[in-house]
Every structure is written in C-alpha cells, then in structure tokens.
Image (cartoon, rainbow, N blue to C red; front, side, top):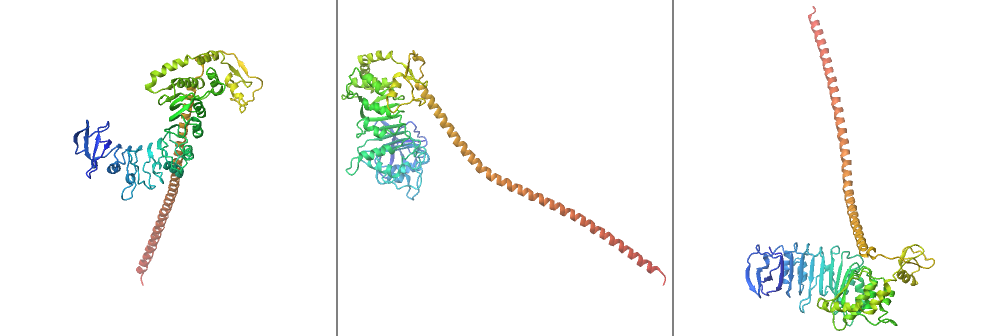
Length: 534
C-alpha cells in the first residue's frame, strides 16, 4: 500500500504519470498497473494517479502542482504531510476548494511546507474560506515571500495545534500579520519555535523596512521559546537586537545565524534574556577593550561588571569560522563568559575547526591574565551576611548594594543596618547546591502545576456536563412522580367505583327480593278470595 510519495520530476502530457523513488514507507502490492523501470541508477515506478489512496505523505517538487491536486483531495482524510515546491494560477486554491465551491478539509494534516522552486512564484491566492482547511496543523513552513496579501488562510482554526513556524519575511508577510493580528497576545498558545528567514524582500522605496520589521518581531509569537533569525542584515550586533528581543524574556534558544557578535553585545543580550540557554551565531569577536582596562585586568573587570548573569546560559554554538575572527578572540570570549555565567559549559566550534580550536583553548587558559586571576580570587571568595540574617557572596551583595536602585536585601527587602559582615567560612564545593538541580525541580513543579490545572479544567468540564445531564433527569423524575400520583388516584377512584357498584347491586337485589315477596303475598290473597263461596 502506497503511503508516501516523493516527486522529483513531472510529465506534461494529459495522461500524466507519477515518477517517484522508493521511500522507506512505500509498499506496492496493492497498486495496480505498475511497470518496473530503471532510471538514473535508481529503481523507479510509474503508476496512474487515480489508483492512489490512503496516502499520508506527499513531497512534490515539480513546477506545476495541478496534476497532484486530484491526489491530494482524494487523500484529504489521511494526508499528514504535504510539501510543495511552487505552484501557479490558483492551484493552491484548487487544493482547498473544489470546482463546485465546496471546501476540502485536510483533517489529519500536521505538516505543510510551501517552498520556493527556481524563479516560480505562487499566484492566484484563495479568498478567505468558509471552512477550516488545516485544523490540526503543527508545522507550517513558507520559505518564500508570503503572497496571501488579504488572506490568513494558513492560520485558520489551528491556533491550538501550531507549534513550529518558518516564515520568509517580506512586505506581504508584514501586511498580513498587521492586518489580521495573527500573533496577538495568547493567540498562538502552543507555538514553540519560530524561524524567520532573510530580509532581502524588504527594500521597496515606499516601505520602511526597519519600522515594519521591528513591529513584526514585536507582534509575532510572544510565547515562543525558541527563535531563529536567518540573514538579519539590519541587526548587525546584539545592541541593535536588544530593542527587538528585550521584551521576550521567555526565549530559551536564539539563533542569529548570520551575525557576528562582539563580547559586550553578547553579554548584554544574555543578561536581558534570563531563560536563554543556547545561542547560535557567527564566531564572537572580543571587540575594543573598555577605557583604561588592560588585558590583564579584563577578567576582573568582567566579573565586577557582569557577574553573576545568565544562570541558565549553557552553550554558544558557532556556525562557521573565517579569517575575520581569530581563534584567540573566540577562546577569550568563551573563558570570560565562563567567569560570569555559572552554568556555561562550552562554546562549540564547527566540526571542521575542532582540531584548531582545542590547542587555542589550552593556550588561552595558560595565559597569565586568566591564571593569575584564578590565583587572586581563589582565596578571596567570601560569604557575607546582612543584619536580617540572609547570606550572599561578598562580591555579589557588594555589587548589588552599589547600585543606587538596590537599597534593600534581595531576599526579604529589609533595609541593611550597619556594615556588611564578612563571614570567613570554608566552603566545601562538593556540597554546594546545584543550580541545575534547582532549575529542574522548579521545572518539574511547573509541569505538575500545569498538569493539575489541566485536570481542574477537565473536572470543571465534567461538572458542567454532569449538571447539564442532572437537570433533565430531575425534570424526568418530577414527571414520573406526577405520573405515579395520577396512577394512584386512578386506582383509588376505580376501587371506589367498584365498591359503589357492589353496594348498588346489593340494594337492587334486596329490592327485587322484596318485590318478589309482595307479589307472592298478593297472589296468595287473590287465591284465597277466589276460593270463598259466593
């Protein structure tokens, strides 16, 4: 039984046949009229389109999708994945709307990919449908300019299921987002990952790409935890990116795939995103040193001005390494991040550069500014206490109180009275609380809370349903009680009638007996009178 089709070329003839390669889920026993051929070193099959049913996957890379429309409609109830390279002249409309005007619902479709093929563009867009064509869509990928100018058909009715979204940013995309408010607050509660592609289509003279694109990013999917922005030519560094990403405090994975960040911009970005765990970008550059700070003083400067931060930041993934950024800068950035981000594990270079990266890391660790900094700080990590009794690292609480906005204890908001008390306590690092375990425990608690809330919602729904069923039952019971009363009344009346009938019958019988006696007396008297002599 055919369950998956991948089309790599098509035939323009009227008797169009499908040429596809063997895929892992393809079984051909039930498909009639199969002719085995050899093509390009691969075993291939040709079959009539009308014989295909119960398909779950279609990957169509031809230029014209009109031959596949019939197959897609025929398998609308079973199709789970539909990938289309490009189409023209309203072919997409034909996928969701028949010639008779009826709309086709792809009730099981979870993956829809509309990709770009050569120079072909998508034209002939559908009007706003009267039905929901993709109610269970989980992954939507539009990797070319969004041309549904006046239509958000792809987002209809799937807000409760859509989890992964890839969009090619364009003027049409911004127009659609702003017009229909697709990503207003809480409109896409399940959306986890957003991948925004290049900005090359944002440069018409009558269009302001900076303002529109910024507004677009601020509107789109505020709850998505994973975000990837490819080819962001207008965001050259993290300082510019902060204005776009600053409000999204729930971002956990961020990809700036064509941007090389300076260390200071990266630190500002990590500090503004408290849940960020993974960052993808081009290699980081150290950038110019702060005023009056030497390389020897750099570790102390970074710790004093940035530590602690990014408690969840774990890994920096480097996309590729070129000659513009040296291995020395990359390794120095990684070591400085390790000083201020307590859970930072590693910076991952591309596989091809691993052999060059590791010696550079060792050489940087042996540099005097890092080694001496460790020696200087290893014996001065003190614990301090405020008068309220809460304890902190001495450098942490000093840095906290040095800020004019922070005048209270971070734990209980009590005003400190008197000096900070330094406690000379030898800390056993083997027994220090693991932040990762705490984060995991908090995550598990949140999962349990979410599960409890889900159960409460279900219980509320059951109570409502029970109430809806109980009320009609009460009415039926009341009617039954009334019927039983009527039956009892009728039985009583029947018994009374029966009693009256019996007494009436007895009265009639006694009257008959009396009349009989009177008649007998009269007859006897007549007989006696007739017997007397005249």
